[in-house]
Length: 346
Image (tube, rainbow, N blue to C red; front, top):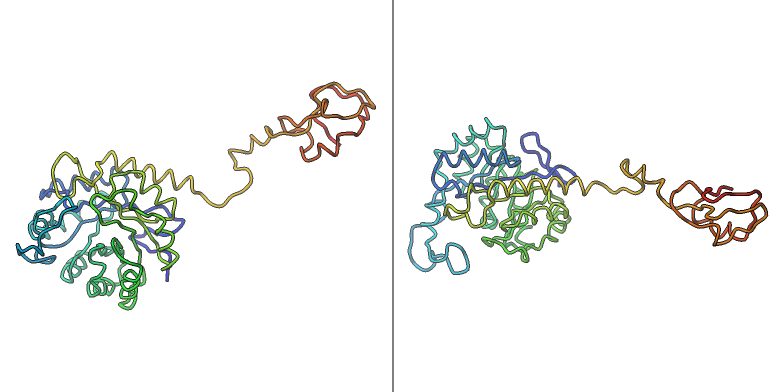
């Protein structure tokens, strides 16, 4: 087991900068130019990587209109056939080379989710640096084994999965040779309500499997990923669209570029704030140490006069004796005249 993976020289895991992935999915709206603009927007918004989805409608399902193949109520796509939806949402295979070139030119990593064995082979020919398995395919153990056999890092989304199903998928990947695995906590609702995210699962997953764990987030919140990072998420994946006003299968649960940028800024701020286990003053706090309390004479005292609570107090600043010594001092007598505002010393 390893708690880190590497993607194109970037180390991902606990204590490392969060790896932020912009999911394009169907937000290209069947326009190659729009897909390129999305890659550019991802780069400008601070994403570390862009992710595609590699499938054809025939690789996911069959063209069939009986009730089994119609999407049920409770989703954005209710009533549509699976084949119709995936025909609209698919990223054409012939785009992949051009999109990878565009990403390379911009200096941003591009990879994809494959949905069948042929897709894995296709992505391997393109030299993709990492493979991703979607939450719906977590139960497709032959597909997981195929992706694991490439030797590339493998990211598994876990939406809807029981702990036993996740264990079965992880074991299948490891048995097939996967050495670098990561898991993404996912809620496969579209959009997902924040109250169903259960982000406390993130540290539990990391402890259970000894792997880097992240979040694939389908809420519309820019704050949920920040909370996930504070709980140990090493990867954040979020859908990106140029505008939710333009209809598309995934628009309703995708962030616009300015929102994605705000999310990334929140993540980076959270990373700074998390820091490390630390006690005692930080460099910025050091000057404030002198504003702590200490024991001072607060009224003029004559030699031989007794120290009392009326003439000695614990006040700011910190030039006198530590306040812990107040009751050691009270009742003793001054050896000399002491003027008001003098810090006490032995």
